[in-house]
Structures are given as structure tokens and as C-alpha cells.
Image 1: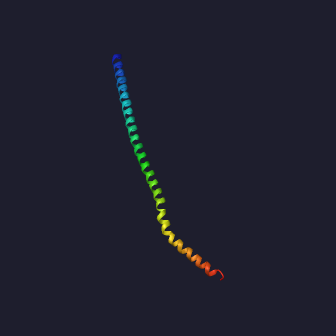
Image 2: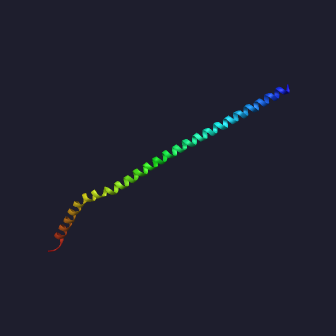
Image 3: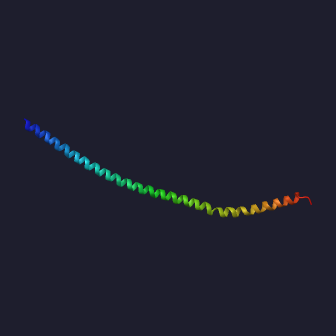
Length: 95
């Protein structure tokens, strides 16, 4: 019966169309969810980068401030070296 064939073909087209629309909507939804996740990840990445930069800057400023005490600790050694050098020079120089 040709009417039955038309009915089957029509129903198939209808089902396939509905399935396509459903898949399209699902895909669109998935894409928007993925975009949201990507934005969240990006902000987390940015925060981590900021923290890393801040820690690096802290390390750098720490290095410059800790130079002062180190120099102060070396100064007496330098002074004693200078006195030893002058003593040696005085001993070497003909009187």
C-alpha cells in the first residue's frame, strides 16, 4: 500500500528531524557549558600567574633587602684584611 509507505517515510523524516534538533540543542548546551568552564579555568590560571609573579617579586625584593646585613657582616672582615695588608706593606718597605 503506497499510503503506508508514505506514512513510514514521513514518520522516519519526522523522527530524524526531531533527533537532529535534539542533538543540535544538546551540542549548543554542551558548548556553552564548555565555554563557562574555560572561563573559570582561565580565571584560575590568571590567579595562579598573579600569585607566581607576586612570589617572584617578593623573592627579588627579599634578595635586595638581605644584601644590607650581608654587607654589614663582611665589613669587619674587610677592615681586618686592610690592616693586615698595611702591616705587610710596612714590613716590606725599607726603613
